[in-house]
Length: 336
Image (cartoon, rainbow, N blue to C red):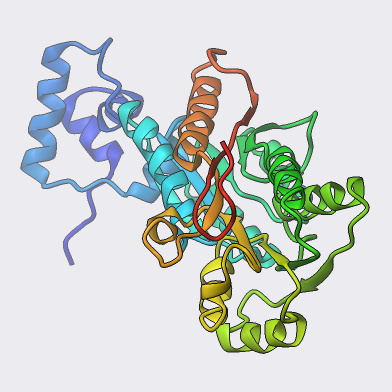
């Protein structure tokens, strides 16, 4: 069997130290003479040496890897967040390791442990409500973390989020003034993410301020459009103006499909509003009003905060609330 070549072997043959070879392999050659670099490169070529990525990650003080944990990578909102993170990271010579937690604490825990083992320099995380239990472990390893979209603490951690509560409070108030008689809210479990709780609370507060009540349906994440159709058919009453608010971007297309027999009643008898999904809500018939989060900017700012911190710089405010916009469409009355 062919003997495995190690960094020690490279160092001995090149007439230098293991530390110098390690610096060379990690691209830290700014203080290294061209002669030394050439000797190391020649030995590596002659021995056909291939360094272990895992070993380099464990030994290096900096791997230039960022661990990103997203709740649901399948939706466009999450895609745009990751795109924003990746653009800033790539410009600063960092790479991403991305995990999809499915809003499950055990999945989050597994990703954190594996990413720490791989030697990531820091984390950007869309956390579930239980993630706070993992923060001590991350801090014990001296790793920085920036929370995105949802946060576990408003004052102790770094985070970037959008003004979900304020947005739905304002939009809800506009729509309530349009004269709807009844209100239905459809949401996945609001206690899983702080974002969901902000949205549902904002809508309920808008109704309470106007003396209105809401029929709230907390549904499973995997509920089908057929099940939603049955739910809505039992709720909707002919001749009664009803506004439907869908709190989760992944539920909005299913609710829209469930309402296929009622779409001709929009917006005068039935109103529909949700979040994001502009990739299809601008082209559906009728088009659908949504509150749009600046997902790309969220990701970009989160990466900027984390990487600035890794560099020991403070260019960005560590906690940021970005403003949503409203994309008024045919499923509700227009507002300027």
